[in-house]
Amino acid sequence: MRRSLRGALPAALLAAGLLGAWELYVDAAGVEEDLLPAPHAVASALWDNRGLVWSNFTVTAEQVVLGLTLALACGLALAVAIHLSPLLRRAVYPLAVGSQAVPIPVIGVLLVFWWGFGVFPKLVVIALICFFPVLVTTVDGLASVDPEQPKLLRTLDASRWQAFRFAELPAALPAALSGARIALAVGVIGAFIAETSTPTTSAYSGLGREIISDAGSGLQTPRAYAATVVLFAFAIACFYALALAERRLAPWAVQSRGDTR
Amino acid sequence: MPTELQSRLQPASRPVVAARGADVALEHVSRSYRSGDGAEVRALADVSLHAAGGELLAVVGPSGCGKSTLLELICGLQSPDGGSIACPPAVLMPQRDLLLPWLSALDNAGLALRIAGLSRAQARARAGALFAELGLDGFQRARPSELSGGMRQRVAFLRTLLAGKPLLCLDEPFGALDAITRGEMQAWLAGALAREPRTVVLVTHDVEEAILLADRVAVLSPRPGRVTAQLEVEIERPRARTDAEVVALRERALSALAMGASA
Image (cartoon, rainbow over all chains, first blue to last red; front, side, top):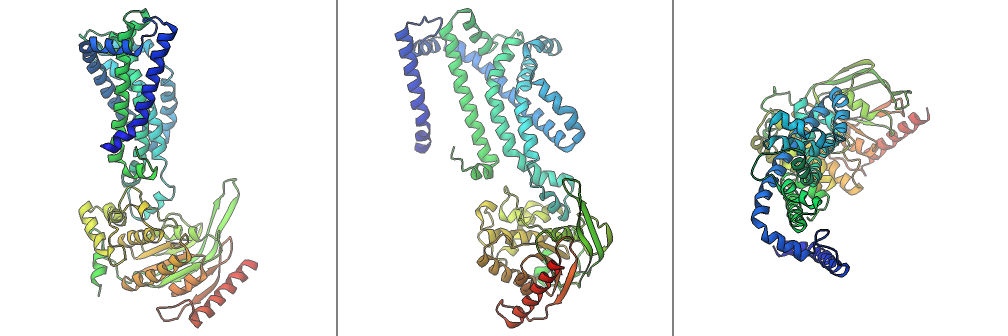
């Protein structure tokens, strides 16, 4: 416990330094609060609106977690299919790359037309944004097995499935988890895009739609920053949760990197 | 009469092979392949080799003489362009150990058993029973990255043995080890094979290693590999590198190698 506290010290010091500089800048330059609220104003906005922020946060967090899960499932399944079939690789890979260029708001309304005002179209948006890093890293990971390894496995009488299960799948796991970390980093912003590009009828529509999009219109800027701080912390927490998962699922990879995270 | 060790080494799902194994016979085998730039490379030309069941045949030759191709042909990973190969089911121990980094030493050793359909617990029990005999006791749970080069080769050899095949194809098994460890591993392999007789084709560039371990040594020429000499090694075991007979035979093999290279 003491070690992990000491590990967090550099980040805490840097954050404190940045916050101090921000506070000083706002004070000294006399920036208006609607343009850039000082940290103390953000903190008090967070406290004053804690109920509203929390209710919307749970909506957003649920979307991020479910959307990432969907992205992981699709990315992994597609990676395995591409790995096993050169035909699928030629057919699917270019389209997967192209899908990353689609501006989501263009299709947001279409998704709602197909699946209604519930949470599902939002998950699709997040998954569309997040599956790609998982796909690319996993495809590379599956192909990272030593080219001599299949020969050895064949003389041990391994079937294609067994070669996959004993060699290729475990070899791809660390790569897939790296992909998941990248996906997570874009997943939180993906949730914001999902919320602002698909209309909803639920009571709380998430931090993105409910609070942060107000900042653009000059309304409630400190509150929008407060919501951003919450997302900031959420992304960090998820990232470390994934690092923890990697330690459990792929300890050999963590070891060989000499990773002490 | 199979020993207890032998009976433990037979996977339950496979028919029990004769302890001495079957004969290996390659007749006029040739093999070519296309290199990266499209040129045809003749790896082996008219190679005839024989090993009786239970014998250790060593194949020595300069690098790039098609030794690894020879083993892949015997293991059925490639087919010859010409000639015929008759041999029992073979298992390959590749040059690099190719242990799976995510498995413990014990699970790597028992990989063939898992592939044969045994449960993890059964495979561990069978492999674990041999760990002490092969000098690996205490390292059951270690990952390959935590093992020394010599230990990794032992685990790889145990994996090869536990495949339960009558013919072992060893491709430069000790090539990557330092001289001291290599000497230890040669003695260890001789001991392991004395306890657990199999037919073995050992490919090496180390003439001394071949003579210390083999019943018969075939010398290959540079590419395309052809057999330039066959030496019977009728020296009592255990052999030492300083024995007069070993030294004399080593000189004969080295001059056969040199003649093959200049021919």
